[in-house]
Image (cartoon, rainbow over all chains, first blue to last red; front, side, top):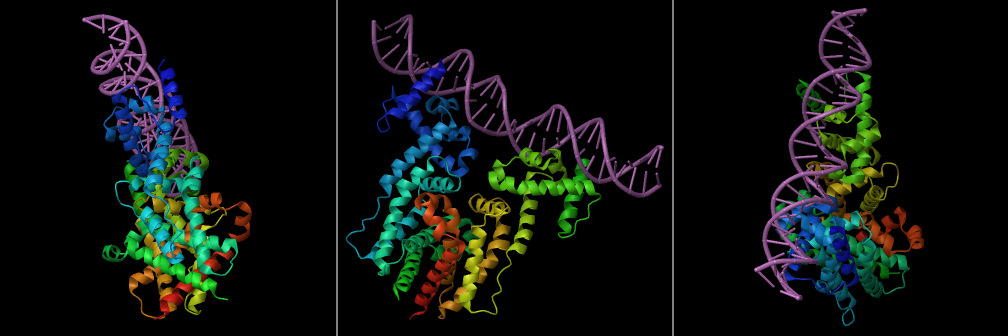
Length: 230
Length: 230
DNA sequence: TTTCGATTTAAACGATTGTTTTAAACAGGC
DNA sequence: GCCTGTTTAAAACAATCGTTTAAATCGAAA
């Protein structure tokens, strides 16, 4: 009985991705409330560590609702990832690369990377969730890389190719791109370590996005100049 | 009764770090077997995800043994970290910095960092455990940073200070050190992403420790040269 | 050999997990 | 207004977790 109801709901959701027609208003409210609460909890505790009880408690709904609306815990997680991809695609449009000097493009790319890493707003849980996916990849990880990382990586490689002036091997350009990404990523991956290594006073003074992006850009421009020399 | 026995054992262990005198052979065997099995399990599943049942099963001992020898799960984890620290100190001795040119010291430091990151031997679980500590810090994380990361970080900052020649602000040297560490770290943190971004043929050809360390060192030397200019 | 403390064992405890069940509350069509 | 299908609520489910308990077992001193 109840199972058939859930299965029909599940297949209905899979068929239409964008528009969802819910029978009435009340269910749509609970459903979106669960979805909104699940993201931060999954990000903070990880998939295994997160509990549906905590998610439902912060959402203010009953525990059984997640089973009714999403089938089970994994179904809810898939929906969270799906919503995350849509949200981030709109929030972080890839910077326009055509009408600037490559130095400015590089600066803009580093700025975007660092902004994604060091975001402390209400949507910081999205980055946290992506970081967890990098360490514990699930079947959705590959599509995440293709949709989010590949465009920025290609743009980065292209921009660096304009900066080295000479024709370097492809893998050298890739290494330069990874050097750029790695420097940005460290200020999130190593944030806990930095918090221990660097006193708070220095951190608040010299570890803002602006200072860090200028430093990383300077490092990469110096490297590009050096690789341009015979 | 039993509690007092355990407490005395616990304090006995804390007092003497190096030499352990166990009453008989049998207990020492079980204890070391638990310790040997716990490391890989903690690394693979994380602290919260690992279960003492699985650890004891792979060790072939009773479940209550971990309570008897280590107090509780966290006590066992602390001992694992302690043993890890001793093992890694012997396997990766900090490079001697005194009798070389700073360029060579930097190269050696980058080599050490990359070797720690990309190790694929039987002891890879140690690095995996450290990476998990960086994202999900447990109460032992701070001591890990102090004992593991701080020495290398200081050595890195000092070496970079010799390379820039001019007197730069302290935070700039720190940023340069983090740039170095970040580039090395990315080839582990982003390994899953690189596996999707770069075809396997290129990966096996140009992503060995030797190529990567030379590249990263070259980037940082170029940056230091640039920062030395007026 | 006997005795006693140290160690291991099997079993169970209480807490927490994801999930299911049963009944009540709600909406709209007749 | 009643009835049918949908949604929510409270409770309970079985499984698993870390931890504890009480008895059995072992090793060596007496």
